[in-house]
Image 1: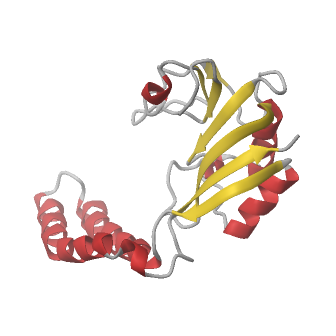
Image 2 (image 1 turned 135 degrees about the vertical axis):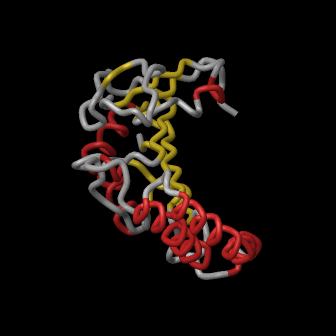
Length: 205
């Protein structure tokens, strides 16, 4: 539960999908806005580089950084800035990828292990209180197989080609039982190959 008086910064907020969760708080959405037909940046409050935030030190109670660090040229600087603008005792919530296909080209630079995540946050003066995998390794493998099978015919024949669409739909039907099985057994397989890590960290001091 976030107190109504809380100051929240959403770093790399994009289309501000989570703003409704903080409608009673002092919510600030920032992003490095670029021209894109696929993204709507109209809700962004402050256009800003995540590595150089235009806010005073110790201003915010909470910081969000959800699927952002892979798109920052120097992710350590982003984590350092996130720590800087947090009050002592403030909390950061991050969703950080370990394995994902390249996306949002050419703004895709890094992937992160749990050890690299711990090092970045510790160096920035934040103590990680929770670091959890988003899913098990089986689901990650199924996701990749599913993505390859569905996207390959569309890339090869074109998104509007009847041949590509038919092959895409056929793979969708054939692989759906495997996807369903992967979701059911998600937590029963090794978690050292997740798509993401959920991170909660608290600023020391």
